[in-house]
Each structure stands twice: as structure tokens, then as C-alpha cells.
Length: 163
Image (tube, rainbow, N blue to C red; front, side, top):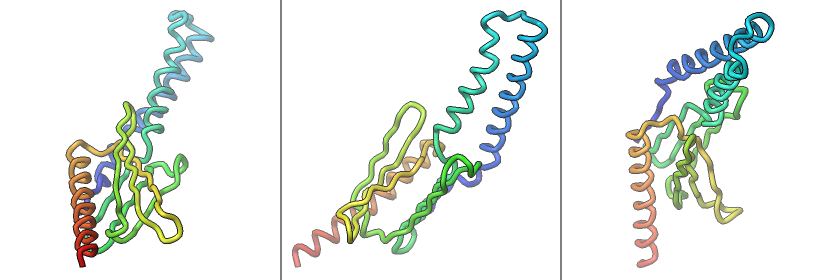
């Protein structure tokens, strides 16, 4: 199964552009309010706080682009940001049989996927992916696919133990 929200890059770029324009306009309006008009009083700080808060939420939600491919014998995960200065891009590929379990953490602002895989050197490795920008349907499809992989791994393990 393949899952990607790469087609939404123009939408995320639009959001980031609007937030940056709001921040720029807020700074100019704040400076004009302080130096010239003095109409708003203490509410003048909202001209800065609101755009900064929107930008912080956009950045804290994590990487916008998430790609998943479980076709074949390997699983591919790619997680990247539309603006590469904030985070490093993540790209992982490993065999399906190494997947042990997964967990989706859903906080108010962000969602994360924690994937536990087996390793030769260590017992387990936990990989983290930002999935905040996936829709509910995409998230359900991802969970369904990962459940299917884990179920197949457990069946193969049981089959090997009985032989």
C-alpha cells in the first residue's frame, strides 16, 4: 500500500506564505501603532502575538510531507518539511519482518507515529515520524496497513515455532 500527502505541498506553502504575510503586516501595524496612532492601547501586542502563535503552531506540528510504501518485501517511510531549515528529512527503508509494533500518539496540536523494529545490534529501535498533517482517512489507512504487516509477522513467527 502506498500513502502520500505530497499533493498537498502547494496548500502547505500557501499556509506558510499567509502566516508570514500576517507576521510581516503585524510587525508593521505594531510599529505604526506605537510610533504614530496609539489607538489600540494594550491590545497592540495582539498584532504580534497572533501571527507568532500561528507560525509556532505550524512549525511545532512537525514535518508536513509523509510518504509510506509497503509494496514488496520492504517498507519505506519518508518524512520531510516543505521548508528544510526547520527539521532534517527522514527516510527509512527496512524489511517488513522487522516491524514489531507501532503506536500513534495524538496530542492536541501534533500526532506522532512511533514504530518499533527489531535490530541485530540492539534488541529494538524506535523510529519517530510526524503524521500531524495526515487526514483521518489517511491515518486509518496507515494503521490498517501496519496492522496487516504486524499480523503477518506474528503468523509467520507462530508457524516457525510450530515447526
